[in-house]
Length: 296
Image (cartoon, rainbow, N blue to C red; front, top):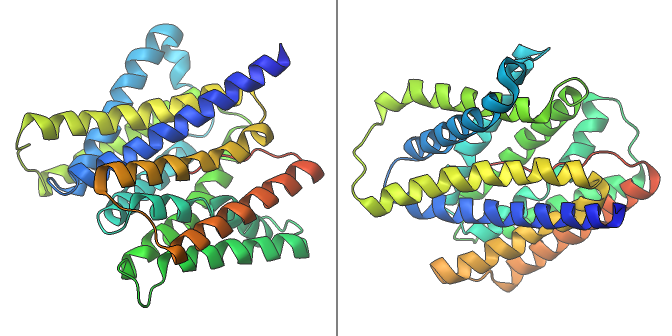
């Protein structure tokens, strides 16, 4: 029974990574037609309304109960900032390379843990962190690359995502994950709504509207699948399978945009996956801790 639950958790996590690859690919497509902020507004409004319609009838006011409303606000703002940077970056760089750089996040959590939480970091961990960031630089190649400065955006996202995960780990001790997910959607929707009048534009056609709805569906369902996955399998079991998102992103990048990474980019991606996988294995072997994926 335990083995079956773990397999179910792994399957849900892989499905979640596929949702995020669809999200990023759709954002890149629709972002060429409408403003990025309009895309973000649709993504979070759908998230907020869907979670409210699903959660409140089941839990009532208990779904809104939180011990740390300020942390809920901060968490929502952090994720909204991640989405803004990510959606801008996706207009300027391929989906596969963008996803690979974000996979440096677990290594950045190690670095921030040493800096902010005074955690002990071994020489092996430092080596893996350096290797992961070296892989990211190979993917970005600020000099002599078509990506250019836009490649620095996902690197900034890695830092914000690491802060987001540390805050999430702290809140998870007292907060219900579905309640956090609900507040995250509403914080993003309300902040985006306040900014929307400055960039509002008419949606040009039904195809664009369908793509905007797909952005909302993919983001909301992806995060829910991760929550259900972590309820069925330990984070240490799921962590190695998160790199499936790179494969999904590269596949969709090839199918939708006819893009395949070059040899240098592939070397960087392989280095990121290797360092992340070894870091996860060593963490699980020495001290199992929650390892959460980056969110969009």
